[in-house]
Image (cartoon, rainbow, N blue to C red; front, side):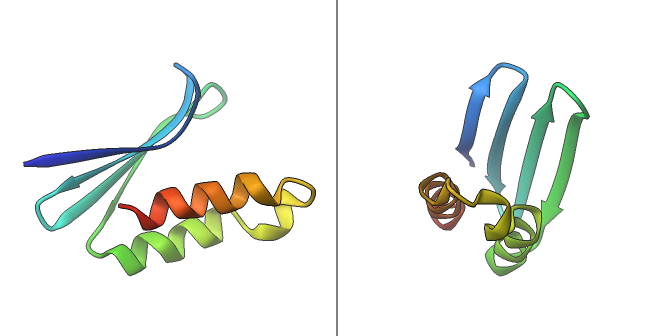
Length: 77
């Protein structure tokens, strides 16, 4: 059974979804600048480490609420 989580969706070209496929966690990041990137993780801690490296808190100065919501969405996976 595949369980799909939406991390964020700004429009149909800028979004990030995570699917739990058995023991694998597949993250799809779609961007109007870079196209689609897919990452596969074997564990939730690996996903969280990637998320914290990909979205460092320092880049969200003045938008801390947005960063907290995004990290909370990753934790719900």
